Amino acid sequence: MVSWTSPERVYTWAREHPWVADALLAAVLSAFLLPMSVMMIAPSVPPGWWVMLCAGLVAVHAALFARRVRPVASFIVVSAALAVQALAPLAAYRFDSAFLASAAAFPVALYALCAYGPPWCRSFGVAVGVAGSVLLTVRAVRVFPSDTATTPGGPAAWAFLLGVLLVVVLASWGLARLRQIRLAYFDLLEERARRAEADREGRARVAVVQERARIAREMHDIVAHSLAVIVTQAQGGELVAAKSPERAAAALGTIATTGRLALADMRRLLGVLRTEGLESSGSGPQPTLADLPQLLDRVRAAGLTVHRADDGIARPVGSAVELTAYRLVQESLTNTLRHAGPGARADLCLTWNARELIVTVGDDGCGAVAPGDAAGHGLIGMRERVAVLDGTLTAGPKPGGGFEVRAVLPTADTVAVDGANGEWR
View 1: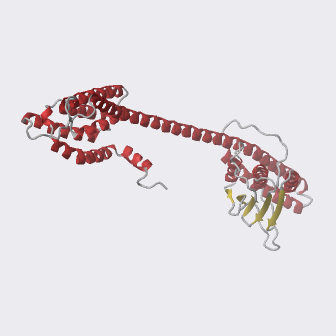
View 2 (view 1 turned 135 degrees about the horizontal axis):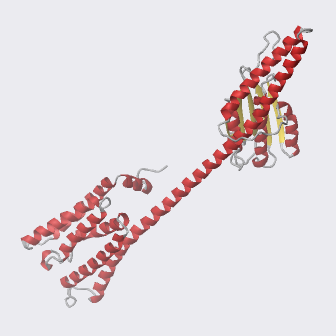
């Protein structure tokens, strides 16, 4: 958890509120440097210089209030005011001072110029800083001549002072440059993250389109099969209508049931066909729940232990629901083989309710990759299939370890129940 005083939070807040951040910094510096600088001005200074020095002090600290939003103007004002202080008479300051304490505001203004100003201002700011360092060193030499006893070190002291001032100037420029490199690095990371997200979304959209095309082809075969059954039953009923009305009535019932299922499948198909140019698949039969034993045998032969349990009374639920349930089991067991690890066990449960079929596939493996993380986007395909049937799909790690996929497939209004004997018809 990031606290309110963490550097990241403070930095973000300062970027979002530049005026407030600059005002706080200017106020803190003014509270310390301004009174000290005023006390350092000698009472015997000529009135004109006294006014200029006080006005310069106020200008220095006032300019810091706009150091980020107006970095060039702020730097020029600070540099001009400090230049006036450096050119003041030697007797203008008390305590044998070469410059006032407010000169410490120059590195702040130089950093703001190099960090927030246009690129051409960086060299200008460094040049002004170097010139100011030389000017202050010359003033210090005049205040403390090398031939006096109060001057420790002589020329070496002046060289050291000049070196310190130049280091301060270069440090201000270096910190600003470091900030720019840091921001450029963060921008690069954000751009890479945006590109990666866009790439993931693009791959997901492609996977959805491919899966919808596959679903549409399979449901095309389902509807074609249902219409073939209707035509066959209608022809048979027409032939036996005169001789056996009972058989004709049964044929009509079959036609009605098959027609309802085909109509439901067609409505779902229209919801899937949102793209053009889908190619039709072959006319081979699509798998149903009756093909699950063969699928489980193939998975067991591949080395995965699978246990199946059914809850409730199995009943006809329509070709689309059966195909979706079969594909869910197939995809889930395939991902278990890939990611669950050696020695894993899978459990398949089909729960038959009056209005829905619940398919649950779980494992006790230790693999960290969930379905859909592989290149095939298995989880995306599962969601698309279930969404076509207006069902729900949940997938994720189990509390005790392993992974579980659970799909609820609505089956209402596709078949009717005979209340007399409890059988589905």
